[in-house]
Length: 163
Image (cartoon, rainbow, N blue to C red; front, side, top):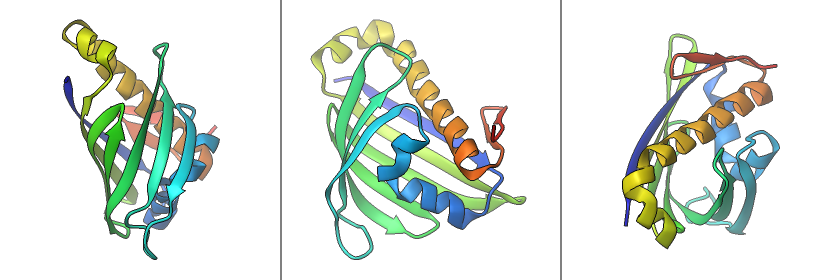
């Protein structure tokens, strides 16, 4: 199995509660995140959302879709949102939230391995392409979040305006 570690940081010119709300409510992602083709809640979890299970379908710039489940394993409101992935990818994703100089800083750490045979077979040659595709998915998220919140979002030295 091919293993990947990604870390993406967004600097969002919006208050932390608004950013938390947008990220926490994953079922609304397809309305603003172009690469999120479908998010379906399978289980609701406890009163705080721990144990919540969603089925995600993503489509990046490359000509394939990726579907997997994600179970929320930890919630620290306005600080951490963590989940465990299973299916086409397996591993852990963690959203970290903080404030810095009038911005909300969100870092997403994604440590997974792929379970799809063709992705594992191609990994030695295509891992850079898969990484680029992941980065493109995250750029689409930054663009969409900027539009949804009506603010600038910065990622990798680029600024995505709200229009």
